[in-house]
Image (tube, rainbow, N blue to C red; front, top):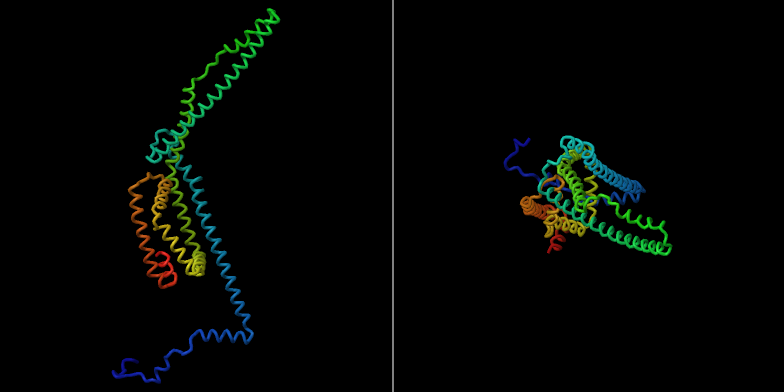
Length: 333
């Protein structure tokens, strides 16, 4: 139909008025509809709609919280149970943890050495306290026996009878009985050796915890992925729930949450938190602590996150909530 249109074609004013928008805004019709419902007595339907919307919102909140709790408990339970009942027996059967030939990593070796040194000092201290108490008890017993001997001698001299003389030698015979005992140094060495074997077995098992944790974490991650695939409806409900919470906050609360998040991950003291997090990760997977890797991670990842936060704030937040962006800039200044 446009092929035969002349070059000097111009739309007439009568034709252009047909496509013009209405002068009345859309809110006028909504207000008119509300007044109409009030006058006609149909406002109860509007109340029913509001009540129904609130009921659906409450159901969404309950579903979201229930699904989050089920998801967290399931993943944690799978990680713990798979490690305790599947991977630990399997790895312990493949590797003899009672063997004394297992080599430790430097980090575990240092921990084992500190534990052994502390155990040795504790055993020596306990034995020293025990020997002091035994020495005091022996002195008291000797004092009591001397008093008893003196009383017996006094009685024998007063009676002057020969039948009482053999009884004087009885305590001496008891005191002359010798019981073979180990020397203190031998007892301490035996206790230290027993404690060393126990510590060695414990750290042999701990050296394998990294592999067990890795397999258990992979299993938990796979279960988490299955939950996400099977619960797409619940994931949408959780997203709506989080959006409802975030958008219900005022601008000051939003700016405060943004500042807390940025200061936690990319703030001045965030490097200490990242260092502690990396230490926990290294210990969890049984890896030796690498200072170079940790410093490289701390010097790059927070910088990237800082740039990502700033890009999000100035590109998205200024359009979605200009007041929040303004408050954030003023609070940062």
